Length: 168
Image (tube, rainbow, N blue to C red; front, side):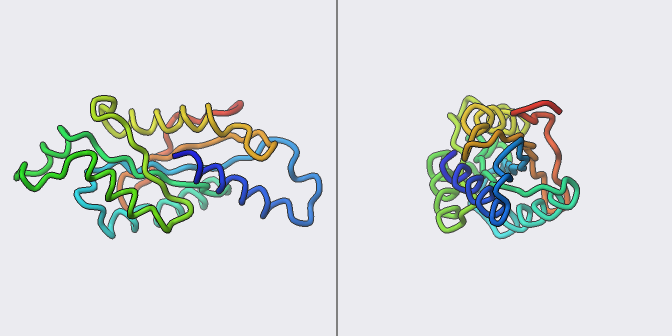
């Protein structure tokens, strides 16, 4: 899931460096969004929440949102939230729906975790943050610092205490 994010960081870097030969030096900052939900199925309010979060995060921080991730909740959580277990799609099916929803959106991807590896939205956000720090901190020859935000709903974006990649 990091490939789309890598391309987005490189695009941000290219856009900011036009006309400024020294702009590839130093540390760059970018935000990432994590939306953890049942996605049974992916609905328009999910996209609305992400769009609203982009505006909130960019207004509050002043730096761009590079990418977002849909993280399907584990089967156990999804079944507890729905009364009719027969109507609950399995994690594999819900992940496939997320992947289809992200297909033509360059800044959005699905983050798939084994069903047993997530305890909730905070652990999902932490896993995404750790993977970003491990895989993207030196993208495009530049050092990046990331703020990862968990999207709670259309009105709430929560800055996770998981900024990685450099000093606070």
